[in-house]
Image 1: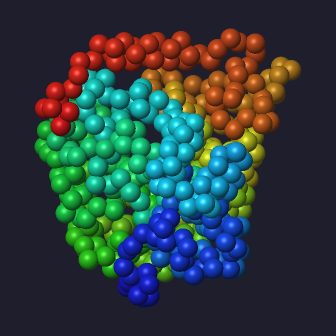
Image 2 (image 1 turned 180 degrees about the horizontal axis):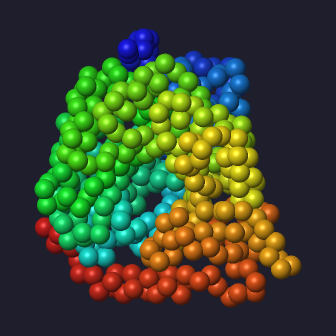
Length: 459
C-alpha cells in the first residue's frame, strides 16, 4: 500500500539559495545566520526539497540536527577568511558577477576532482568519450547529462563541482551510444554504474533511452547495471506517486527480465531516512521488481559519527530487505575539514558497529577510502615488531593483482585520508607507487599526443 502523503511533499520541487530567506523553518534564526547560510551556498551547492524539510529534519534540534547538517550549508564549511569574504559580499548585496568571481576562486582551491577522476579515469582507448570513467577493470561509470542534479544536495558530496556551474569540470554524456561502442571493445567490463548527480531525477522515458542500448545482445558480457541514487532517502515519491512511478518500476523489471542483475547503490546516511512510511513503501516497490538494493554512505562528522547510528541503520536495512555494502571515508575534497573523521576513530566506529550486528549485516565493508590507486580499506591498527601501524588492503584497485594484498602504513592518530599516510617499516614507498607513477606518466603522454577533437569524435 502506498503511504499517505501530504500535498506539501507530493510534488517535487527544489528549494535553492534564493528561497532560503522565505523558508519558514529558518525564521527563528537571526538574520546574520541566514546570511551565513546564503554566503556558503554561493560556494558549495545547495538544494533541498519539501520532503526533506518537512519529514526528515528535526527543526527543534537545528542547526545540530544531523539531517540539517546533511543538507544545509554551515559557515565552518569554509576557511574563516573565505567565509568572511563571502559573508561581507552577501551582506552588502554585491553584484552577482562579483559574488561568482569570489566563489570561483574558493572553489578551485577545494580540490574539485580528487583521486584522478578528471585524468587517470578517462578511457584510454576512447579519450574523447564524454561522461565515462573507467578506473577498475570490471566496472565503468556513466554520467548521463540529464542526471546532473539531485533530489537534495548532500553537503559532504565529493561530486560538488558537477552542481556549481563549473562546466569545464563536469562529467556528462548526452547519449549512451558512445558508451555501448566502448563496451563492445572492452569485454572485460561486467558492470556499468549509472551515476551523477542522481540518474533517477530523469523521467522514466529518458532513463530508458540511456539503459536500452546497454541491453543489446552483443553486450551480454555486461551482466550488471548499477544505479547510484539517493532517491529512496530524499524523494521516495519517485517510486510511489510521481506521474511515471509505475513506468519507472516497469523499466526496472524489464532490465531484470533481460537477465541482467540490477543493483541499486542506495545512499542512506542516517537511520532517520529509513523511518518514514514513504521510504519503506518505496524500498518494497523497488525490491519487488527483482532489483537488489545495496546501501552505502560515508562516515561524516556531525551526521553519523557514532557506532550506534551505523548499528541501527544496518539492522533496519537488513530488516527491510536491503544489503549493507560500504562505509566510506569522506573524500579529500570540498569542505572536508568540516566532516572528516580520523582514520583510527573511523575504524573503531566501524568495528564497534560491525561487532553488534548479525552476520547478515556483515556484508558491509569499511572504512574504505576511494583513493587514487583504488578502494583501500582500513582493516585495523596493530603493532608489528616495535612499530604501530595501520593494516590496509585493496578492495578494488587500478591493477587487479593489487586486490586483497595487505600492506602497512605508519600509525598517525590525526590522519584522515590515505595521502596523509607514510609507508611503515622504514620503506621508501608503498608497493604500488612505481606503477602509479608510470600510469600518470602514460596519461600525460597520451594527453600531449591527443589531437583536437573533431565534432564527430566529441559527439
